[in-house]
Amino acid sequence: MASKRILKELKDLQKDPPTSCSADMFHWQATIMGPPDSPYAGGVFLVTIHFPPDYPFKPPKVAFRTKVFHPNINSNGSICLDILKEQWSPALTISKVVAIAQSFSDGTISSREGGLREGSKA
Image 1 (cartoon, one colour):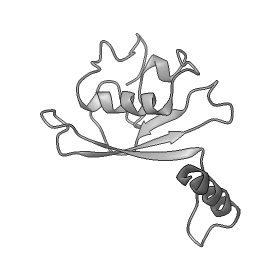
Image 2 (tube, rainbow, N blue to C red; image 1 turned 135 degrees about the horizontal axis):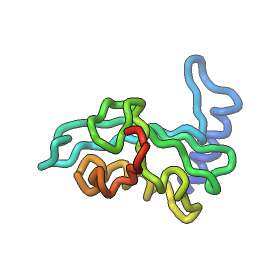
Image 3 (cartoon, rainbow, N blue to C red; image 1 turned 120 degrees about the vertical axis):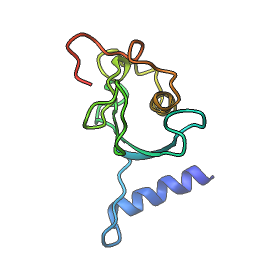
């Protein structure tokens, strides 16, 4: 019931948004909390997710908006990981994508495992 109502209200909001407000189901924002016992403990990290028109056949663009110092996150906040680029699979879900972004802050993905390739810019 709630999801049906929220989708209806999103459509209504897109048709006639209040002044200085927008809603776009192709642009999401997530908040990732830095896990305890990690270098990111206490941090709050904003992540944007932009869906292309041909999603899920093309990957979403995922980027940290909060400055993050990690070998697999470039200066623009983009995550340098093959499965978010040429190794993307339509079987991956947004929950998995957010979990991947969160794994950077808990040390699960190291620079060796994170999809950096020779010639990649991180």
